Each structure stands twice: as C-alpha cells, then as structure tokens.
Image 1 (spheres, rainbow, N blue to C red):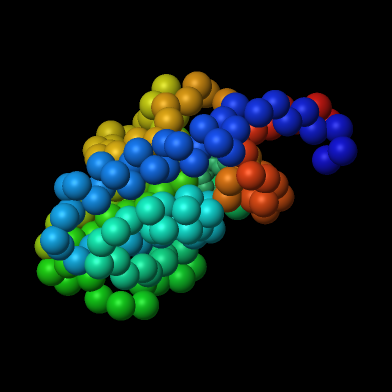
Image 2 (cartoon, rainbow, N blue to C red; image 1 turned 120 degrees about the vertical axis):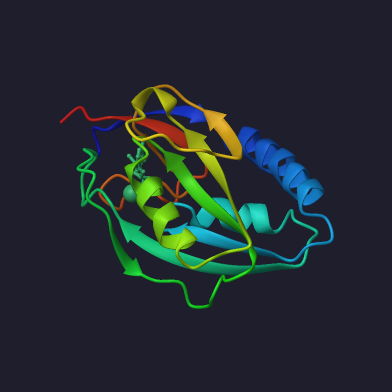
Length: 176
Ligand code: IMP
Ligand code: MG
C-alpha cells in the first residue's frame, strides 16, 4: 500500500463545486415534490452526505447495499443485495445516488430491483461515469464527472475497502 501511486484526478474543491451544481439542477427539477434519496452503499455515502446538505427540498434518505466486486477491481457481473431498503418506495419520487457507473452491471440489476417496488418515478445521479467501460446500457439522469478508463479511489470509493476517507478522487495505479 505504501508503494501505491495516487495521482489526484478531482480535487476536493472541484468536487464540492460540481456537487453544488448538481444539487441546484436536482432542486429545480423536483421543486415542491418530496424526494426519497436512495444511496448505494458503501461507495456513495460521502457523495450523498454532501449532496443532501445542498438540497433545499423535503428529502428523506434510505440506503441499499449491494456487492458487485468482492475485494478487487475486476468486474464479474455478479451482484447481490447485502442490505435492502428499510422503507417502501411505492409511489415515491426516487433519486438513486451512485458513486460510479462502470460496466453498468450493478445498476442494471439495481434498477430491476427498485422498479419492482413500483416507485412513482426513478432517476439516477452518479458522481462519476466511465462510459468507455460500459457493457450494459444504462440511462443516467445526472452525471458529476465523466472520467477515462482508470481505477479511482477516495471520496467514498475504495480499493479493497481502503482509501474511502480521501477527500479527493485519485487514480490508483498498483505498483506492487
Ligand atoms: P459496474 O457494475 O461495473 O458498473 O460497477 C459499479 C461498481 O463497481 C461501483 O458502484 C463501484 O463500487 C465499483 N467500481 C467501478 N469502478 C470503480 C473504480 O474506478 N474505483 C472504485 N470502485 C469502482
Ligand atoms: Mg466498491
């Protein structure tokens, strides 16, 4: 770990500015309507915490926890729910808060799970998008940053559960 090369891709100030822009857009789109945020654990919790404090709306928050990768950075396409929603989303305006869209496997699975609960509407905000890696088609409503095909950590994102506490988004190049 000490040898890991961690180059800053998005610094904390750049992220904060973009989070405020996204929040302004979301607030305008949902004005006057109660909104249920559904955060995807664990990666999205830092982003959600910053985003929710910029939303001058009637907001409630729930989390769903899914595992897609095990403890390394290679995708398998296998996804399972390890913590379900606590409250029904039936008939509600739901905004899913994601950390990063990569192959799209995780979100495709998640959308199926959430649609089955019959929300009134379902939109997605993702902090990061790596469209070059997409295998499954995904419709995203709000994107923070489109990034190249690099493995990133920090601001909630992990490698083997490490680095979630970094205040910025950095590129992890394993030097081994
Ligand atoms: P997908 O199913 O390939 O779209 O993967 C989405 C999930 O993989 C995300 O929610 C992350 O947990 C993880 N992931 C994908 N790319 C990265 C990355 O660059 N850094 C950290 N986690 C990632
Ligand atoms: Mg992860």
